Each structure stands twice: as C-alpha cells, then as structure tokens.
Image (cartoon, rainbow, N blue to C red; front, side):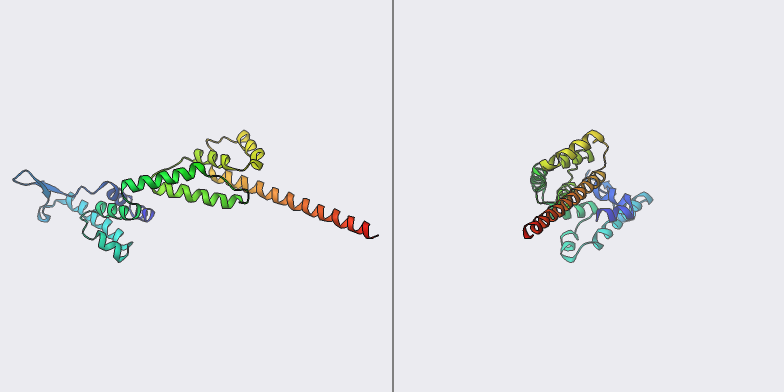
Length: 210
C-alpha cells in the first residue's frame, strides 16, 4: 500500500506519516479547537482536501472490518496509525518482532543441502520483514553477511570475491549472480565426474566378464 500511495502523490504519503496539521483556532477560553469550516481560507481548504484524499485512498485499499476500526479517525495519519498497530502491534510488540528477526538475521547460515537460490530467498524474507518494521541493513552489510553464511566448501569462492571485488560497492544482485554461476560450474563438474566413474565401472565390468 505504501508504494501505491507514494505513486499517486508523495505529498499524500508525507501527510499520512507526519500528519496534516488540520486547521485550528484558539477560542475565548484559550483552548485550541478545530477551525469551523465556514472560516476556512484557501490554504486551509487545500490542507483539508489533501487529508480527505489521503483518507479516501486508504479506505479504498482496506476491507470492511478494517474500515470499522478506522472510520472514526479524523486525519489520515490517525487512520494509518490505527492500521499500523493492528498489523504490527504496539511499539513494544514491534520492538519484540524486530529483536526476533535481528536474531534470525545474525544466526542465519546456508545449510549444506540448500542451493544458492533457496538460501537467498530465506535471507531476503528476513531482511524484507525487518525493512517493513523500519530496521534496514545496508547493501554492504547484507553482502558481507551472505559471504559469512556460506558453508566451508564455498570458502575458496568467498576468498576470490573478497580479493577481486570491493564489498562496499558490490551490488547484492551481482553477488547472487556470481554465486549461482559458481554453483552451476560445481554441479557440472560433479556430473562430469559421476559420468567418468560410471564409464570406469562399466569398463571394469566388461573386463571381468571377458
């Protein structure tokens, strides 16, 4: 939904995150209250219209149950905050989720029976979940983490990459491509060795039969 809102109008997203600062006035008791509609000036109307537009976009993207939770919200920010708590929990719950995922990230390793693609999918599931909660790792941090999580059999390739590439600027996608290419060469070599063993075995059987 975030990307959808930003694609429509980035001002809408700013308003949802930071709040619309709806027009207010100070009454005779010194209290700050909502400004009556009949006292709006042009700037006030623009702010209110943008807030209404943002609320409309959110409402169009949610189901009836979610609508019931947010229908009484005055501002788009209030509406978004309620949805955020519904799906991510309170700040305390959110922090607990982040801690759990960070632990998964730090302990992440590639298993011996995994291929590079499967490993990378599991890795991105963790980093994407963290990003959704506001915890973002840099490209360089993720590149180094991937290299550290590889099994010992991959160490020669890891060393070659570290010596040939600048890990500070190496795109994660390029690293993935390099690892998958190396994996294919390993598979090809294993297949060739297996075929050679079968040939030798067949030759041995023929000699014995003679």
